[in-house]
Amino acid sequence: MLLLLMAAFAVSEADFVARDFHFASGETLPELRLHVRTLGPPGAPAVLILHGTTGSGAQFLGESFADELFGPGQPLDASKYFIVLPDGIGHGASSKPSDGLRARFPRYGYADMVEAQRRLLVEKLGVKHLRLIVGTSMGCMHSWVWAEAFPKFMDANLALACLPVQIAGRNRILRKLATDSIRSDPAWNGGDYKAPPVAGLRGALEVLFFMTSAAIPLQAQAPSRDAADAFEQEWIRRRLAVTDANDFLYAFEASRDYDPSAGLEKVEAAVTAINSADDEVNPPELGILEKEITRVKRGKAVLLPIGPQTRGHGTHTNARAWKEHLVELLERSK
Image 1 (cartoon, one colour):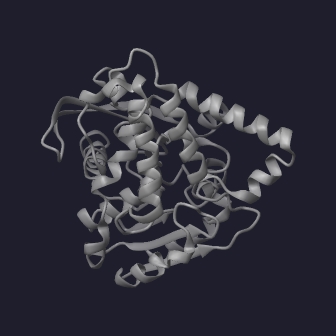
Image 2: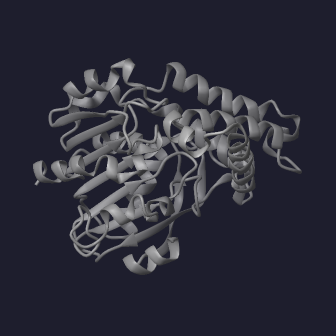
Image 3: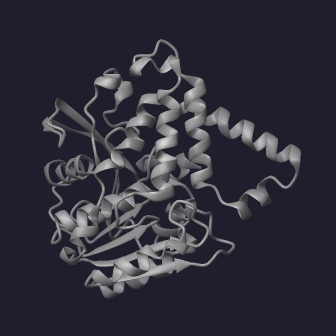
């Protein structure tokens, strides 16, 4: 399916190398690589789409996203928009600890990731202004950082599955449990492991599963005891096969500098922030989004009720659930 979609949408892939990249921690890399996929004609109104923790830009080429948004006549028609899908620092084919530096890789944060994205746009792709940012999960948090740090750079921001405040409470505790699980495995060896710390990484992935899954879709996918056991075994097997412990640890800890709450009045772009009622990472009972969005001049909050198209935290990548709100945002941000 992915190859068919890439052919249909004429996806181009490239690497951007940022020389002498300075991180907020004071650390530097002589060369920082950012991998990017693009669709559509350069010079057309640009759309930046940002992935979540442990993801990559490739996830937006799946049928639940690309088939709903990028085709002829669809909201982000790839013949009319220049669509940019970067792999964030530490993710996908971009520079990351598992390339060789391991725990000596700079401790990047969200501010670093956004600055690398900005340099990619300006220096590599010649994009000086964005029609729209679409951010999912971690990318959603990046979109808030973008909107405050560079308020005139974009017309609109679709913030999917996050909150515009410091990560705290249950969300923070779950992240700490995941990273502590890796660090507590003796095989991790301070990041310089001879063989993968499977026990610690398995515990971290189990936390990730609870954060991002939803009860109703899982009940349909695994309606019996045996089906549920088989689902769990296959999910863990697949994730262990493609997940590096240091990459996971760095990606989860990168959120430590995220806190846009003090500067929401600075946001000039039109914003639609969307969460779903079955999202365990950003549960609606907290009431945070509804309160904070009132501080955003052109902000709008949407809570999607649990329904056939919601997938818990993963609803952010199922465009059918929210694309009508994207259409409305594009219209009101003309």
